[in-house]
Length: 232
Image (cartoon, rainbow, N blue to C red; front, side, top):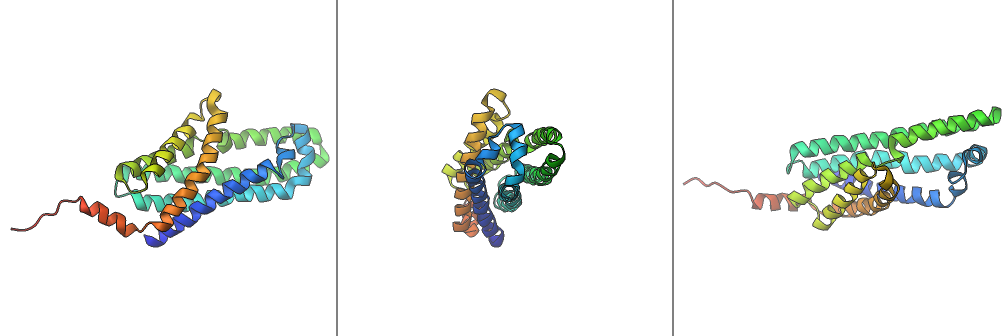
């Protein structure tokens, strides 16, 4: 359990850093292409293709695989408190990780195809890009429902069990609600922004907690509340 907890702490920090780097790249080196109109986008894609690959690898693939380890570590930490709910949360965590990885794979393959098509037929490349964007947004980028449900469930289990810091659990409940609210069209943009930025802090905080906290302390705390029966 100790090794898995350490791995969960390290990967939570990496996950947080990957999103931070991804947002930083989005706002700086990739801003000319990501803020472009469809026709400008496909025209610029060939020049930014290598940078896009790096961005997708970090923000989608690295973060997605790290999320799997974090989900396993949290399942190990919290399963004794609420086995059924943690099984549900862990499955949802795996689904979320799979969606992130799938979205990254689609983007990696799709952007290369768009760049190749553009050399032959710019108009067709724009159509392919629009279709690619619709698919990618439908999988993960347009809302944060899956991630919101995952964080909400495990924060609620940890809150009731007292396994993780109370303030971290309350923060997680708020983030989870923001992710769920992101499916409401009028609130989607602000909710996704709140979820994305807060999630960076939450994962970094969680990583530090997992690396610092000894699981034996939590076991002793739980055992202190278990009634002991002695033989007369």
